[in-house]
Each structure stands twice: as structure tokens, then as C-alpha cells.
Amino acid sequence: MCVSCFTQNFWNLLVLGLADGFLYALIAIGYTLVYGVLQLINFAHSEVFMSGGFAGYFILNAVIGTSSPGGVVSVGLVVLGIAGGAMAGGGVAFLLERVAYRPLRRRHAPRLAFLISAIGASFFLYNMAGKEFGRDAVEIPAPFTSGPVFSVFGAPVTTYYLVIAISAITMLIFLDRVVAGSKLGKGIRAVAQDAETASLMGVNIDRVISQTFVLGGLLGGAAGFLFGLNTGVVYTMGFTPALKAFTAAVLGGIGNIRGAMLGGLLLGVVENFGAGLFGTQWRDVVSFGILVLVLLVRPTGLLGERLGRSA
Amino acid sequence: MTLLRLIDLEVRYGAIRALQDVNVDVSEGEIVALLGANGAGKTTTLRTISGLARPVKGSVQFAGREIHRLPPHEVVGLGIGHAPEGRRIFPQMSVLENLEMGAYRRRGDLHQDTERVYSLFPVLKQRRRQDGGTLSGGEQQMLAIGRALMSAPRLLLLDEPSMGLAPLVVETIFSIISEIRKTGTTILLVEQNAAQALALADRAYVLENGRVVMADKARTLLNNERVRAAYLGEGAA
Ligand SMILES: Nc1ncnc2c1ncn2[C@@H]1O[C@H](COP(=O)(O)OP(=O)(O)O)[C@@H](O)[C@H]1O
Ligand SMILES: [Mg+2]
Image 1 (cartoon, each protein chain N blue to C red):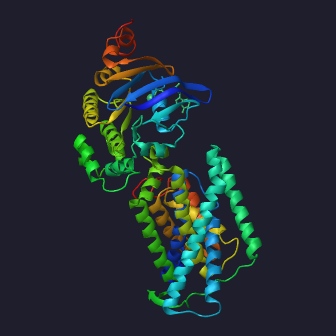
Image 2 (tube, chains in turn orange, purple):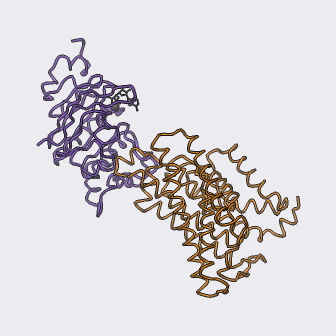
Image 3 (spheres, chains in turn brown, orange):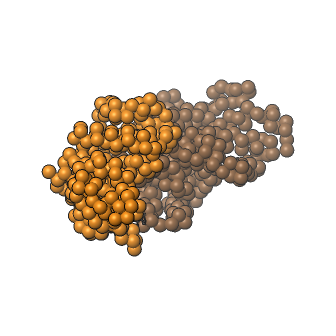
């Protein structure tokens, strides 16, 4: 343990942690939304995330080529990448629900069947991606030149971190408003609280479930692109971040949307603090240690389990 | 004019036959009561009308149209509002949001509709920002009825609105049910509280073990020996 490494790096670790945390939050929303309406952990959500990374890669590859964009063009390219990632994520999530879950629902299959179907779909998708797109990581052509924009107490905040923060905050606010105020949001909350009664009110449950997957998929796919900008894109890229985002969702209270946001940010920060304190190799130990601890001490998570609240 | 017609209905839960040869007619503007002991099949009848249960035989006709193959979310759109057994309020939605859920399939301004519900149940207006789950049993029942009214139904299905409520509250709710009828809404009322239901209804059906064993004018049934013995708590017939 190195306390001075931690204290000297505090602000750096905080900035890093928040950037990671925003990504976890975006992915965690997908778990929590789906859990809310189906009481199901969509373990193939990692591949929703991965598909967003690849979509961003292909789109920016086609558009940017070898140029090095700047200014307004960069902004446009980031928006394009996010939109492409989001659409791919939404599309994959939509298909997942149709192919891997809905047929089981129709047959009133036991819970275990859903879990196996999820794992099967996940294996299928990432191996498919590996076969089609190659086994090696590829880099997304940079839509902007990242460098320090300003610093907080000596910790540089780079363009990349700003892009993550701004786009994540925008998407999280959008999601929050949709769930609180829109017809779809009310449908999602009603199905989460009492699906049968929701159907008596005129809610088409199948449609709401489908749209819930898409909503989570949009954010997960966008996160895949943002993540891929920094680390590159590869068929196995979804595994660790998605598992951590799942941890974040449980941390905040699975089924609770603001809980997922809070859990994501908290996990990002804490695991970077852990890495600073104990060394980078301890990073994942810290995150999953937290998962186990939370489950032991407070099984319903920090904010409790429920998609009910107006956000 | 006949608004709702159940014809030779048979409904099963696996091996259990919950309804058999059930024939029920409800005319426009009527209050019809469906009576019977626990497990007689009353709730199943309402659930079948709403599309939550599927008949294996027979049919459900509403306004001249066969509806028993429609999913529940379409049935409500045709004009059948359902205040289900146990009230089933969305506990973590506000009273106002619960009411809005009742109008889920409708478009446009709902202000008049919510005001109408508030005028029937003034307490709901006071509590409109409160979560449904925090209401008392009586208030929840009012909300369940108000929510069903928000779909602007031609037919209102009420499943044991008096269940578990204090006598005074039951009185209030029954008087509001007759108010609702005055505005032209047809009502199919399921009750175990036979005395009060028969006092309110025009006609009634009595279910036993999934079959209709009696059907008559409410007044006639009130004076029927067997009904008095079995459902009005008077000594053996
Ligand atoms: N979901 C269910 N699964 C199996 N049996 C059921 C179910 N719901 C009701 N039943 C059975 O169907 C019969 C009718 O029940 P119900 O319609 O709830 O009666 P009531 O509303 O008159 O009390 C009862 O025998 C009950 O046990
Ligand atoms: Mg019942």
C-alpha cells in the first residue's frame, strides 16, 4: 500500500475515476432498465457495448480515413460516432430481446433458461465479431487531437475526458427525463411495478419491453464507442467493462435508474482510488470486492431496488 | 341494447376448470352484480372480459364485436375499464400518474377527465402528488376506480370494491358507483358483499363453482330464500 502515491495523485485519480464512472453509468442503465421490466440480467449487454465500439470504428474509418480533423469537424465526428454506436447498440439490444428472450417469455420458461440464453447469445455475438472483424484490437481513427484542456489542482482534464463527461451527462439527463416524463417512461415504470395491471391500462407490454432494451442499448452502444476511442476496439472488449457496470448497477440498487448512475460514478472513482492506493493490478480486485461487500451488507444496493421512482 | 355478452364461457387454469357454461348479458346503462363465494369464478370472469384470461370455449362479445382473442391493452381501448381485485395501484407512482396511466391509450388533454375523477373523489385531489402506495385502503380503492374511469369506458368492471374496507368507506364507494352509473357508464360489479351489491344493482348473477346458478332482477334475488341463506348471512334455508 502506498498512501503517498494516493494523496499525491488524488485529483488525477478522481478525474480518471469520473471518466470511467460515466462510462460505467451509461452501461449500467441498460442492466437496470431491463431488470426493472423483466427481473432479468441481460448478460449479453456486454455485446451491445462491443457493437457500439465496432460501429464507431467502421463509421469513423470511412469518414476520417487518414486526415486529422479539428474544430467543428471534430465535434461533428464525435456526434456521428456516438450516434452510430448508439444505433448499433440499440439494434443489437432489440434483436437480442426478439431472438434470445421473447420466445422464452412466450413459453413461460424458467429463469435459468433466460440466463443460459443470455450467455449463449453473448458467446455467439462476440465470437461472431471476432470471426468477422478479426481477433486483434483495432484503433478508432481519432476524431480530435486529445490534450489537456484545463486542470483541476494540477490534474489535467483532457479533451477525451471532457467528451466523455459532456456526452454522458447529456445522455443521462435525456434518459432521466424520458423515464420520468414520457409516455414510454411511464409505461416502463408501470410494467416494472405491476406488468399485468399496466396491460389493463392499455400498455402493450411486449412493445414496452422491446423499447426498454433499445433505450438501454442506445446508451450501452454509445458507451462502447466512447470507450473504444481510448482503448481501441476488439471482440472481447465488452467483457470487463460490462461486468463492472453490472457491479455498478447492483451497487446503486438494480432496477433503480439514478442508482445505476450513482453506482457507476462511485465504482469508477473507488476503483481508481484503489488502484492508486494498492497499485494498478488491484483495480479489478477492488471493484469486485465492492460488489461482494455490497451484496453482503446491503443486498438491495445503495438506493434500493425499484424502477418505480419517477427517475 | 346489449353491451356485453358472455356466451358459454369455459375458462381453465391447467386442470382446474374455473368457469363453465357461463352466460351473462349486460345492457347499456345497467348495473349488473356478479355474486358468489370465494373461488366461485367472479374474478376469472372479469379477467376473461379484459383479455387477461383466455376462454377454451365460448366467446365474449362487446358492442357486437368478438373480443376474447384480443390482448388486454386493446380491450381497454374499446371502452372497458377494469378496477381489478386488490386495487393494484402502482405504488411508486403519484396519484396523478396513476390516473394518467388509466388514460394511457388516449391522446389529448386529460384535464377534464382528471377533474371529473377529483369531483367524484375529492380526497384524490388533495393527495395527487402523493405516491399511490402511501394511500389508505379506501383511498386506493377510489384511485383504482378513478383510474379505470380515466380510460373513458363504456363498461366499468369493478372487482370487489368493498374488500377489506370499513363499513363507512364501503358506503361512500357504493354511493359513488351509483353516481358513476348516472353519467351513463354501464357497470359490472363483482361482490361478496351481496346485500349492498343487490341494493345497488338492477340485475344480478350468482356463481357457484364456476357456473351461473341464479340470474334475476336484484330485487327478486334479495327476497330469494336461497340467496338470503347463502349470501346475506341469514340462518339456514
Ligand atoms: N392463477 C390461477 N391459477 C390456478 N387456479 C386459479 C388461478 N386463479 C384462480 N384460480 C382458481 O379458479 C377458481 C376461481 O377463482 P376466482 O375467479 O379468483 O374466484 P373468485 O373471484 O370468485 O373468488 C378458484 O378455484 C381458484 O382457486
Ligand atoms: Mg375474486
